[in-house]
Image (cartoon, rainbow, N blue to C red; front, side, top):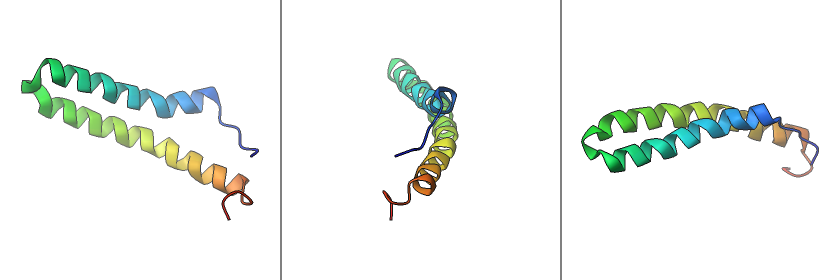
Length: 68
């Protein structure tokens, strides 16, 4: 493979997923505020998916022999 993804690009995709993990911890600590946490997690996952989808498309485009 010849695709290069920068550290900043990876952090941009990873950080919202780390936020989701922390939100789960907060929900476990205070289940009464679960609705707020779930809304936050949904937003964070959607933010993470955007760059991940772009990375997948870029990897497939730059490496067609791997993803025929």
